[in-house]
Amino acid sequence: MKMKYQTITMVLLLALVPGLAMADNALMEALGGKAAQKAMQDLGFEKGDANVLVLTDAGHAIVDGQTSQAAIKGITNESGNSIGDGNLFRPLRAHWKPLWFYFFDKSTGEAVYLEANSEALSKSLDEFLDLPDDQVFSKISKANVDIEYLQNHTDEGNVTFNDKAFNGNEFGLVAMSNVWARGASYDFLQATAFHDHLCPGVTSGLHIAEFVEEKLPITNSSESYKVIACPQWCKDDLFQMRWDATPGKSGMFVMALTDAEKKAVPNVAGIYIRWNDTAKEGDALVLAYNFSAVDLPKWTGPSWGSKIYQDIVLMPYENNPEAFITVLKEFKVDAAKLANLQNAGMHPLKVAGVM
Image 1 (cartoon, rainbow, N blue to C red):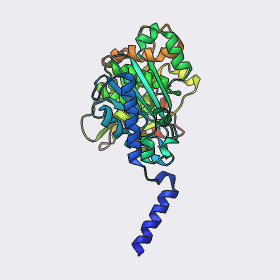
Image 2: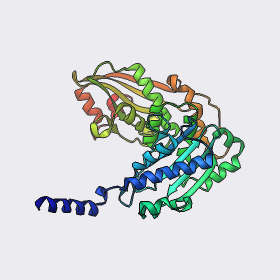
Image 3: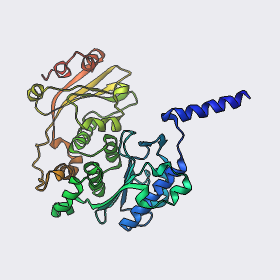
Image 4: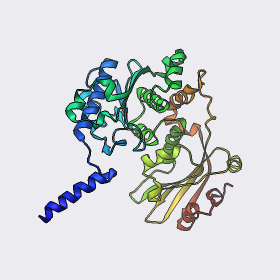
């Protein structure tokens, strides 16, 4: 009898606390399956097509207390896309954001965006399975998003971006699609998904990471990288994914600079430390990153394409990051100096001796 009351109490708690509400996995799986079926119909591809990329916030979004990770299973079952095959990524979104699905075919440049209708998810499974697509999804849009196509069809791009065909997700989804189509690495796309979109700032993080790894390679299990993100920009989200250098584990310390301070140390991009936690010592680099150091091809169309195009023309420099990076200073770090670089009230660039 006591066990029965405990079970009833637990069920009531799960029902009352939104964050603990039990997900209807079957319904979410069916939703993912319906999204894939609609995309396969509209884009004309078959299961297992290696030209197709899926982006979704399933697993991040929570709809009326239901977690959404099961939708990924539904996608994989229908279209064959999977995380393991490197053709399914989940850009980070806050859990209260809409649940959406995006399919891109690199062979045609066409993409389909579908946004889940939360009212449909309140139905029983049988009722849900009988719903037509226009009731399952509150928004279904199709557009060609290949940047070379858009460069020659800016009128179509204007409609896609200005009319928010993907409900405000246009920039991030189109950028990720285009670099994936051109061979971007899985780890880079993972970091991009963590940042929630791709922009040249994330690409600069890849360049800096590769530069640091070349100059200060990790040689044993006692070593790790620490980042003094001063100033911070999009680059720093890549280090969290690539190096596990997170603020919560004291792997990254984020500090803003004033405009005057940025002018005092032009293009400064932070301090990067290879730290040996056993020896309590390390080596540090103060780096500058100059986006204008290389005369890259320029986008000549509407403003919505500028950063997407820059993302693409930066791709060949993955193996030549020094084209953009300058070492402002190298120095040794002990425990006391590390504390000064990290602690509130201390200016890390002054501690490093570059300001």
